[in-house]
Image 1 (cartoon, helix red, strand yellow):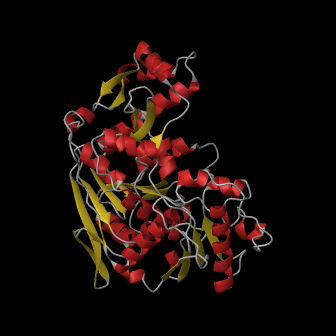
Image 2 (cartoon, one colour):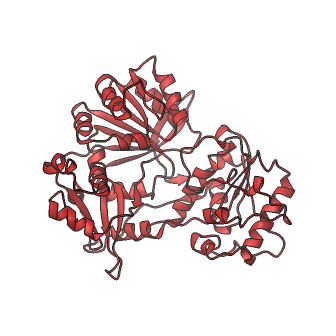
Length: 457
């Protein structure tokens, strides 16, 4: 099967990617499925397209009585020229029939924020893998020395899914193989295998063309995935052209200079304080070891208190923070002596550092970013097993931090004050605001630790 060409529109937030995409759809005579992260964006796209395009907007709201979401998606494929849907609902509705219809009718795919690329899978083990092989529904194909994947046997798919003695968890995995690859990754010792979901070429290959609206694409997991699977990617940036926009090849430099006056970065540390200065301070592994009375946690709490004293913001209404979730669940930040009360440092102001697709925090102007982000070790190991030994952890960290910050008031063009106790994260953000960030996306190929594109199609 010929792979579609991917156009990656790699442009900073606020450049006008969505506006450009809407105008492209209006001018086109092609059919589009538009996959968006949150519901209010679905409404925006639909309102701006409905006078020019036969559009169906599908979200989590109630459909006509007696119509399921899956049926609504199926109907839209038949009667619409543009379907607007959330990431989750799109993946939930993929079936063999929908993939066939997407391919036959030459639909194009436009994705705002890339689909999830790698995700660890729990609840299944080698017993399940052996059961799949015994039943003939899937077999194992080696991709590299370290990574194998399950290959779906479509010829018995329908029969398998009707079997009553097959566990629901196994049927769910087989169903997911329509749009996600299931990878088996060997550790260096070759003893403890683990399992990862990754985006499947089967899903993208059904489309005539694909456009990604993203930022920090170069060197990202999606970039590496495209390289490994042999996709041709046009890496573009969007620039303003009078009252409109134009595309041009990406220059390879990422700059947040235009936001320099909208983001004030501070180091919430008292005199003589040191926690946060070392490379791995505030990382996930270090935060796991903190106790309620640890010196490091006391410094974090002092930083929170100093932050609020200096800027005198409304603790309950104008504050957003992130840190390791267990610290919140255990109440470690609560401290009456430090004036850290539950309305201030409780769950109502906390947001997970990897949250996406949320728009309800755009009134928050004061942000405490209490994380030092590194990619999950098993994702890094998977990428290494696929041949990417030069994966850039700083790229991942900056991408995650910017995604989080754009949940706050900066997304509506208002200034934010950001306290960042990790020196590493603070320097990454400051470098970006000065326009000094450049990433590479090369791969080191090591013998048989490389799979050709043909092996994944």
